[in-house]
Figure 1 (tube, rainbow over the protein chains, first blue to last red):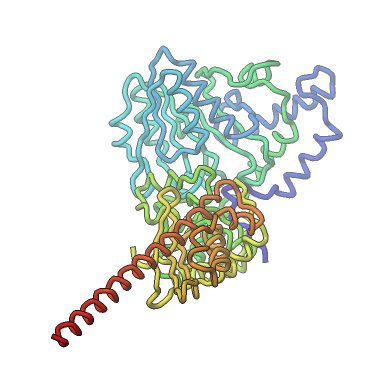
Figure 2: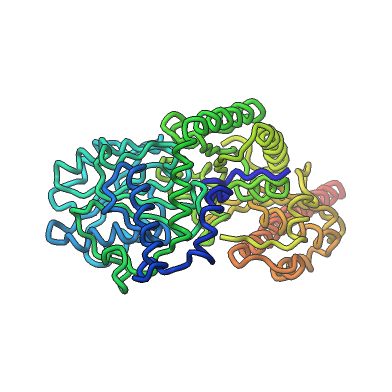
Length: 385
Length: 147
């Protein structure tokens, strides 16, 4: 049996998405910037996609900028907004559980002379508004807090944080990569100035993402050249990718309510099963304020990478924030940020369910995880911490 | 990040040799890695200067378990004096290579072994001293009796 429980890393392209993408590779392959009809027809498709995406996200379509990834979108929005608004101030705030591309972008700004503050999260993995209030001031140009965390799936109260930022005239960016389709994203309602998405996290293709930037806000472009995206992001329009992302987003939200219910049931079944079979395990981060596809579990006395490798030989694919799985041998900074003790930092597994996950797969996973953790615990020198 | 383990490494991880606890070992060591948080325990049984038996416990990743497993396989039956010179490179070679960031696992296994041998030698040393003390005591007693 093959069980893919790493949907927060990437998802399978929905066959319906692939189907609508295909003609743009070898039939309608004109460059959307060309002024002949082959180009113009594709420019119309591009405009259509932009409008569809904007409508789903509750955004002004002029604010939608197609990129190669969410990593690019985060780099562009964070560095671009800060650099372009230096007159307003020299201070940037990010949360303690951001994706490395946000952290590294902030670090780059620090090298350029910005002050960067990290707003902590509580043990549930949530940013408390009072903590942000302690850090923000009139010189704060930008606050960036992710909507849903990629490791522990916790959901931030973005609109509350935005309200506070607005009081200081501070721009707000949110990395919403893990939010689709679990949360409805209404950019107007949220009040964010900038937002990032990635297609391959919700059944779309890899290599395409988007940046939303409030048309009234200026950000210094990251990639310059032929003036595409109104000069905000140069590079030939990736039409198959953009068409694919648009279709994936449409499907994701059309099938949202049925899927969210189903996946939550499966996730709860997984946790109930594991809890029943194995002592000394716990969920990392809030179980309540969490997307329904995520389960991040600490298995006491055993090491995460060993669990992962063992499970992968049983056909189950998961991920871990253990130090042993990282090239730099550093344990997950997210788990450290929620205050997990160092004895537990290397004992975690992230299960991220998806559209294809079935009850049979979950039951098989419960059985196999029980076996794996049981085997590794048998010869662990650590028993009570 | 992709981790490329050899088939042999995976075999040792899935079916580790000499794993478990040992009662009343002649040498024992607990070793931890400050960087990655892994831990290994080694137990030695020595007879006539040879490693008669070896066992280990592991809180660690696949390569931590595999490197310790293959090392115990290699040193079992070895003279203690030879085991002292056992090199981590032999583990890496025998496994058919390890990912760069996992080399430290093999080094840690060898460090654990050396620590267990030291522990054994310390005990031997104490045992010898105790024996010598007892011999001396006996001798003195004989001297006293003769008087």
